[in-house]
Image (cartoon, rainbow, N blue to C red):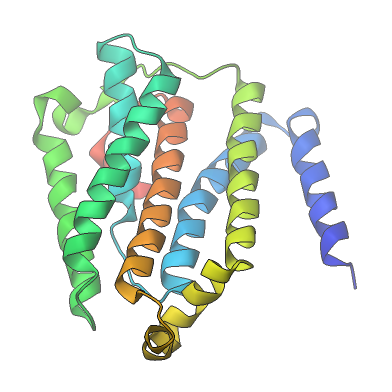
Length: 229
């Protein structure tokens, strides 16, 4: 059986050489896999580990994607400035929505995430600033195709490592207790609601980073495109 570290090293080596040995179509698929992995990783922390169900993560990807699309195309701003602004907006919206919805339990919580996910989808589609349902075209690339590939995968691997380190920490052990042992964790002094908000924020920022990269990779942002992502 291949040791975990050897498997990880082999995987990283494959990712490093993929643009030089694979056809362009397969490299594009790897980019989409990485972008989806960022959102999925946030859901692993939020739903798989913490036990908080959410069906609205595309909202946070959309906020960051539209922020960078508007700043770079309509105002000629830097994509890196748009990243900071986009993630700040994602954080504010996540903290607001988390404060409202994470107090819910049972089936009310996932239903609420579906509700605000649909609401913000229609908001994106009806604002003139965002091009309504036509979307925002001609979003500038970050760099050439190969450099963009490495930026996407560097971000993905960084989030994977950061998540692993988080779950191995003291806070991570408290997060692991939320899904089935929330009452026990609370009896040991863990602020369960605060911890859920933190995990919700992490998942939102992961989705936001994916949305920002998605906008500059695809060079187009629309409600329908983000709903399928």
